[in-house]
Image (tube, rainbow, N blue to C red):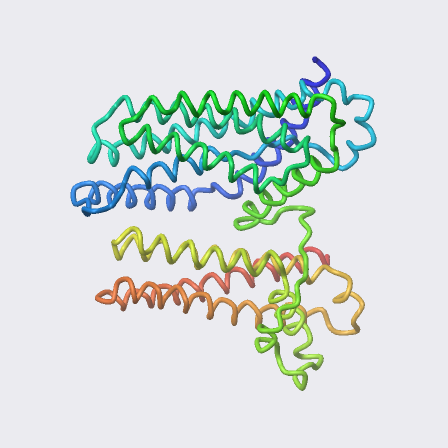
Length: 403
């Protein structure tokens, strides 16, 4: 028991230190100011919505879907690829290891669930003033978080696909939370009894099964990659591998083959690797989508402009990390071309990318706030300022490495 606890604790601490290390780069002063402004604007919009709620909308169902979605909790085990070899003799102590994994995953999701529930309380009380129903919904949600984690663990031992596990947990939580919000809190008893029975049957079936280490390792790898991708939207993550995918419909964006000369070869390299990247390209797309959605939600042209400026700047910062990923690889060192052409090619690439992304955000801003379209010019001013700043920093870094 103590060995299992120590092993899990060591891995948890290592992961927490890694997240804390990257968090200091993500949550800097500028980002904290942006989050404060964005959160204040969203809360203001939320309060205005509560005063003018549209009729004929089932708000209890909306609340139930949000809360039920949060009950679907990933099980972080922090298992490594070598565990399938080195933990074989430790398998009898693994149930204690997974117990700590369930407790840790459940605590984090329970905190998020309760905070979200607290935010949704005013919306619920505007339409249905049933304190008992809401309390029962929260109790059931917390129960489903922990029981869902236990069921996920047992089902993974039985080799059941994680997608089916998540769907089952979501449907059970949705049915219980919705009926509780509708004023039938007694229904949560049947859901709780059903989960207890299901856990008992799963435990009986999995009691004599050998632990499928590969299944747990692959699942943890997916969760770790998702965590790194989220962090990589704001700062560079060491050791993160990117996959290349051929997208024929984007070949039109590549420079013409006639331009594939010494002066244009690195521009071609950056553009080609970007449009075929499995992570870098979609990170930029997600930033654009999130930025445009937030501009639409706040319904205030000044706050919307601040959000647009932040996401335009974040995209340029994200693209600047693409330079290190490509310029320090093997091919730029092998090709017999001057080193200055690498930076020149990157300048052309990031200028084109910045103009395209800033234009998309500008068009969204104008469509959302047409009467204040002239403020969109500030987005381009910031873009050129950020581009010059990025180019200067990269050139300075190259000079320091050269020395």
